[in-house]
Length: 64
Image 1: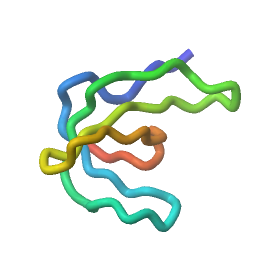
Image 2: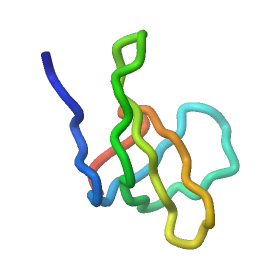
Image 3: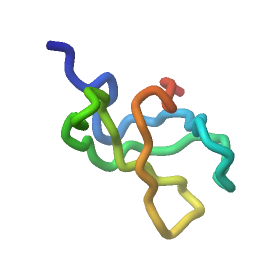
C-alpha cells in the first residue's frame, strides 16, 4: 500500500480544489495526517506569513 508522498518540513505548492482565499504559493508541510476513510492522505501545511495552518489533501499539493 502506498504511503504519504510528502514529508514533514518539505516545501510544496498548494492548489486548493475549492475556491478558497488562500495564497497559491509555497507552503511547508508541518504534519502528515492519517489516511482518510475515503483512502486519500492529508497534511497540515503552513504559509510563512500566516499565523494559522491549513489542512490540504495530497492531490492539492505539488513539490516546489
